[in-house]
Length: 347
Length: 264
Image 1 (cartoon, helix red, strand yellow):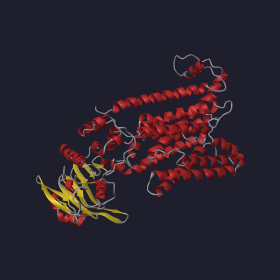
Image 2 (image 1 turned 90 degrees about the horizontal axis):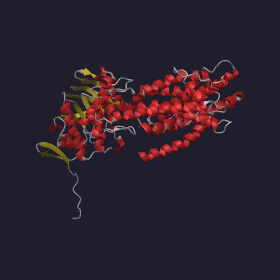
Image 3 (image 1 turned 45 degrees about the vertical axis):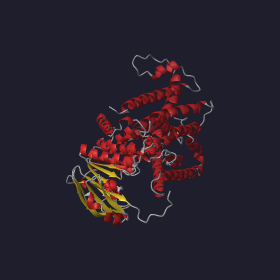
Image 4 (image 1 turned 135 degrees about the vertical axis):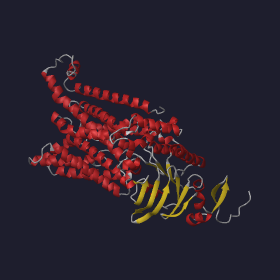
């Protein structure tokens, strides 16, 4: 076999194993660190209690409650949100053949924010909408945002990437303005909406996890299954079609799934920026550009990244807490700049 | 695979870009499509590949391609575009592997059989050493070989090449055309290529077809199409037909009187 792809396949599998390890380590560190010191050995035993032969952890009821009711759901939710945002970023970048595409740039997140705000406002004035409506309204908003950006970008002359990004910026600003307007007109829910916008993993409970889980599982699965087809789309629509693919249909499926993932993340965790752009780019520096690997590794990398970002959010200014969106931007923007410099040197 | 076009036409934006093209290429034949810029060469190739909506019929071994699914057609017809889009950061092997797409199921990732085909094609085209190299580091001639490799990895019966020699130096132009000639001999691939360079066009394809404003204005063997009169009329060029080793070769000559220059 003259192909080196068998060795690079081995290397990529090693990277996947390393990423899994990273996720597990960050989860462990995140549940251990907090205002109350938990006994680490007992925690490890408690977490491994399902493995036959592991002894009783001997955790006190109070510690067990802190672990399972406070820290575990928060960490699990951070994993889900991080995975959703990163995978949808990778998917948008592939589908639009634009390295700058991400849930925030394309208006998906802003649309989801508007949808969620409308539900939060309506929820305070009547029983019409419950939390179950939140992901659905976010999803419709996200899809609307992307469709608008794509429509305007397309009419701005071909499907140039610049046109798309500029349209996305315009749509995002417009939807954010609408969202702010709705928010300011409803002072009674102002505080609730505001904390939600800045990202709120802090109030996470298992109900948020259950609310988000089905959307996350479905959308991430769909996107992982489309990794190779995203590579084919990278050849341009004409050549993809000559290889027997229906590019418009593949792109539609991918964009819908990515918007669903974005909406699910925004609905439970508010607006957390930069994850969808920095994680996939970091992954590409390690394993190359094939979406067969970038998409699954973005899920793992995004999960680990957001768990660690959340850890920083709740420990840096302890006993206070930073909004996680602030942490991801503070970490993400410089890291992104460094990545760009490195990529520029390598190219 | 035998390729037949029967009254093929393409209308774009209400304008007929290609009209009434009827031609037959036998299994393993090579048809060269000539014509000045904008004559409809690329559009005709796109119609054959099922990428442009057309009227008339495109038949592969007596089967109308309109009755085939996109995927089915892609297992038979491969296209090398004039300026293929190269995804950033992709390696030669990964790029050629994309040619396996029509043979891989929708959610599949391709198996050892697909890698084996890629390996065999890379070997045949002398690209095995470059498999792990990124595409953007290749020279023009190397890249063109990789584009052909991707098309061959598709294991097509018909290979469509849109001006495969553009932007190559004259040695690399010959390399590519000789490669196509060899593949057609070894693999029995039927070839249709749009060609810009008339002197090369006269030497490689079995048959030529000259398009002008979407209409076939001359067709036949090289000597019938590449005459000084036809080239003057449709290309507005002044050429001389020169016999080289038994082949007629066209060379362009300067149209206006040579300017008086100082003797160096």
